[in-house]
Image 1: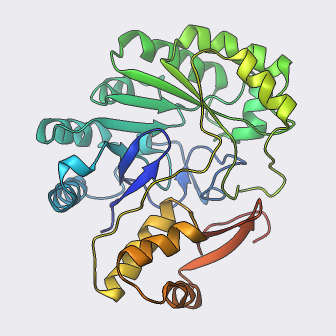
Image 2 (image 1 turned 90 degrees about the horizontal axis):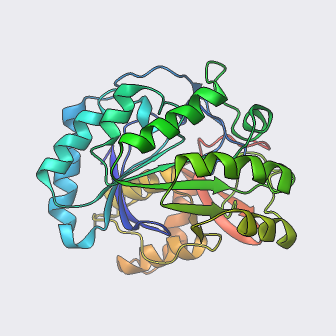
Amino acid sequence: MKYVYGPVPSRRLGRSLGVDTIPQKTCNFSCVYCQLGRTTTYINERRDFFPRNDILQEIKERINIIGKDNIDYITFVGDGEPTLCKSLGWLLEQVKSSFQIPIAVITNGALLYLEEVQNELCFADVVLPTLDAGCPETFKKINRPHPTIDFNKMINGMIEFRKKYSGQIWIEFMAVRGINDNLEELNKIVKYYEQIKPDKVYINVPIRPPAENWVKVPTNEGLASIKQSFKNVVEINMPEIGDFQVIDENISELKKELSEIIKRHPMRLDQLKNLLKSKNIKAPEKVISELEELGIIKQVNYDGKIFFLSSKVKRAKD
């Protein structure tokens, strides 16, 4: 499938069926910690990248195969910023009316100042915006936004969205050592959180290979400062547990499906092996080697673990 993948295990959303409406690494941020690498198509204009009816049809097909009971959330997230998709609201409305499954949208929040985006996201049950910085300087350093994005305008958009949105807002904060883990920066961020009034704050650390190899997890002292500063905190700085899910039994189609997952969600070696074993593949190492030889995935060592990323991911050392 081209637009729908998983379900994949999510530390926030359980068994998450991913919906990707954006071409690979098309975004209005190029975050230093992004697990999908550096942004290659840098835009801040909403448009339709793919036929919306094709996306909707894939969603329906996948749910019919997987079964509603095996999905905790239908999550709009993927290779780039989902609110750049002009038909996002239409898709959310269609999915909402067709299935009784909670919908989540993971967004960087940059376009929440737009009334049309605010109205569209009201169809979601949970919206997860990102706010990693308390000032424009740190914002530019960690998120590297498109030059047309204004920090204060983005913040005001989040505040306004909270006023009209009746669903859950779970803010995500990615902690990066030496950038946003000091009390001065944290105090600035807290003031914005108090205005946005999120239902939860998720503290993330870069547990997967980041776009820039200098990005590090904060020290224990830095993490303690973060937890002390924020309210309604949920820590998700541990690797996710749970199973990835693929459908195809045919080895050729199985490889395609694996590549579609890894393109959006890097996998640890143990996760990839377990997934292949669950499909009764007796020699998972051979399948992994074949995917590497074909140039579909590549191996990266990070924090003492082996990860597999899409070969198209652009990182600092590539």
